[in-house]
Image (tube, rainbow, N blue to C red):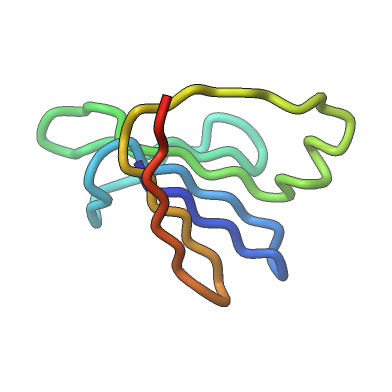
Length: 83
């Protein structure tokens, strides 16, 4: 999984599969899903104005047992998440 957040643009991307130069579909204003063109399988999503949309959300705890890459405009961080 790769997570990219651009603070300046308030833009979040999450990729579950290998990012490709396939296509994105706008499913709502500012929300895009990405699919592989050959299989139509979902591999990611993007949210414009992420912080603005989520400012009233409560924290979410997720236990992951996979290697997660967190990317930002300023730096790239790789974390090993343990359950």
